Image (cartoon, rainbow, N blue to C red):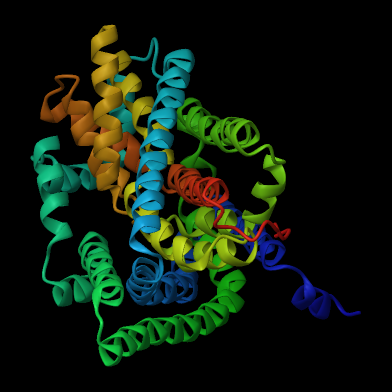
Length: 448
């Protein structure tokens, strides 16, 4: 069998990993060549031609997110009996917030143990931050004035936005709010009407949503066939620009965040699954690895959502209606990875600026982290704006906050990969846990 034929017969996870690693190798090689032989302009020209092949992959994923969220939520909210939806939905939300609280505890504990920035001089870190300073100031100008109260107020208002505007703007909270209300309204009519014609009309709406999801799933399949190519160019683009420099100066923070998220995925989650479900947790993780790898590469919970829903239904055997309801909600509100990321930079800031944190201040920071993380919105780099809220609880002024954000901007592309993988894994495992305890799975787990 030829190498190309073997590649086509390999699993999607293996093909994506080949694209990721080979792209990183090519990108690092181009970065080294530009530095060693002074051909930076030529490398930039090459990447200007090649990078759109990676960008179009992200655009394709974003293209199918809005119809996936809308049709899946309407289908999920309208297909489950209201009593079962209320019980399962309440448990899903409870599990999401519980997982974020645990993640925040893990993140804070690791940050205090690793103690990033201890002994570092402010001038040294400021010198490092200058490379990314202009980008940080732009972020500060756009988002720095927002308080936690303003963020939460905006979240509430976004839930009840004009649905057509929400669909056009890709406002996931607005789409989720309207889709859930629309689906529940369909179910209410079905359960209360005595008119057979009205009942049949409502059932036809559910069938229409099912048909639309089948068509969307076919598009998803075509996008996934392209994903190894897109991943290759995304990886090559990142490493050709930054090279090893994106990792070198930030080893402590990078290792802290990455180890925290990996600890969460491969130790904390499995312990909870084994305790509550009496199942092999690593078999469950193996079933969702396709979504985990895609989340790592795309850096977006929302862009990974169509694959998460498919994996949940096909690999974990989760009830279609529950998966359609729980996972779009989780992609917006469940930010486990962010809850590990933010405390690490908060402790870094405290060390840099000589701030001693009391137990009550640490507790307030953890609560703020969980509440603010909901605002990350499932988009790449969404955690950057939340740094302003968390750092504001430390009493830092705007200049000091800009320094920390500048440092975060420098390493954010790498941290975002681990964050998003943690977020998506948390969504899938919380959904599976509720489904298993509510009898909403078929009892079969298919390997990924």
